[in-house]
Length: 133
Ligand code: CMX
Image (cartoon, rainbow, N blue to C red; front, top):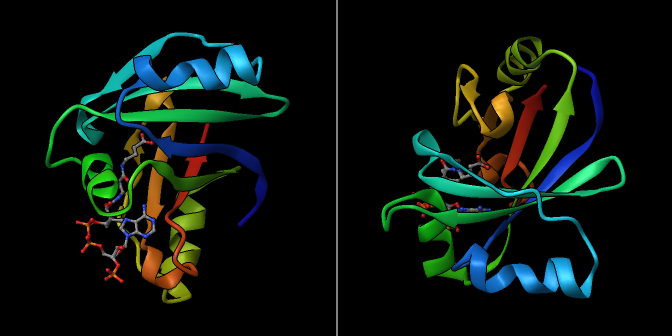
């Protein structure tokens, strides 16, 4: 498995509209609009930072992963996403190594990426996303 970079940090927010000022006006990152990913029950906003990005995540439903995360822990880093060269190979390898896969096969993420999540119980408590673009 080859990880090439941190693709993005996923940050759960109660409202992209209410929270984006810090990331844009204060930090000076560029807001490039939003995209809703129904399958993940989120609206996302990517803000590029060098070769990586910050992804603001707003839930579209009270039973979505991001809504549950905010309910339990409040706003904050919800996942770390690593860019991989070949997500199918990576998932096969991780499964062989006994890592619990939330997604056995890749799903479609924002920006047309192929994504899959690993269970935080097997990853030092950090929800890890693999992402192939
Ligand atoms: N980071 C770290 N730990 C997390 C977590 C997160 N984001 N979300 C949940 N957990 C922990 C919980 O605290 C809990 O730990 P304890 O048992 O010690 O309390 C454990 O994982 C299980 O949590 P749960 O409440 O029983 O399970 P949930 O129903 O909340 O599901 C998870 C957790 C990770 C399986 C679910 O959120 C998931 O499938 N996530 C992947 C999809 C996703 O996050 N989509 C949103 C982003 C989409 C995008 O970027 O496009």
